[in-house]
Amino acid sequence: MNSIDTAYSACEQITRTAAKNFYYGIRLLPPDKRSALCSLYALARRIDDIGDGDLAPGAKNEALAAVRKSLHDPETTRDPVITAVTHAAQRYPVPLGAFDELIDGVQMDVDGVDYADFGELTSYCRCVAGSVGRLCLSVFGTGTDPRAPLFADQLGIALQQTNILRDIREDLLNGRVYLPQAELDRFGVRLELDAGGALRDPDGRLAALIRHAAERAEDWYCLGLRLLPELDPRSAACCAAMAGIYRQLNARILANPVAVYDRRMSLSAWEKAGVASTALLRSSVLGATRSTKSRTPVPEELR
Image (cartoon, rainbow, N blue to C red; front, side, top):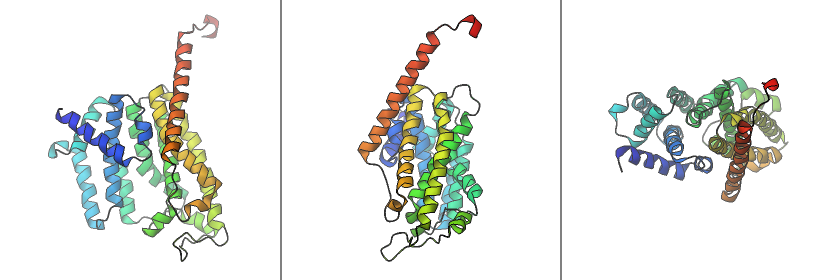
């Protein structure tokens, strides 16, 4: 196995181990695209882990700066993840600047940025998740709609909103609040924990806020999923599986907001596999329909 193969293998192992949700979609891709996407995920994961880790803020700043430097000057390192990303960027139109956006977003976490309104939160989501959507798109490839990068960005923002709602309690324990202050004020919510360590909500106002936010996230899923018809069947299946797991999670939060008060909500492995299988089946049917249409002559009067 040569050094490139070894690098890709390391990235795939990271993805298989760490991507509890995304790997259900990634494994639906053909080998070349799967390897490339695993390399992008592995680097994105590394950046996220710096922000979420136990290092002091100064050390996190240094680590983020080091990742940024190695990304733009890969000759300075033999790191397998950087090696794989660099190779993937030679095979696909990977927008490496999207990693800079991701680093900028994680830097916001390190700096403890608060969000005054949903516009500010959207900018954060675009950095930490819309960037990942656009990175994935570079591997998927697209059809003819020039809005495909916008759709990928919107889908990433949708997923991040679900992440925020799922992790309200965990983030609060870590001293972070992502819900916009304007919305906390509008719903009359003060985030705090009760004696048992669960989110406190004596009058149901937090539940109302979460329900409102989950409904809005669903709107963003509808916007972002316009991407699917622009992708080939296997890429569409991958994208639909990754988004579908989070969208189903979002639907559960919408139906029962209090479920996130004392635990981190997730789907079971069987449920995730079911979402992936459904995505593959639907994309296969769509691909067959496209193929049939492409072989059917169009009458001249309709052209």
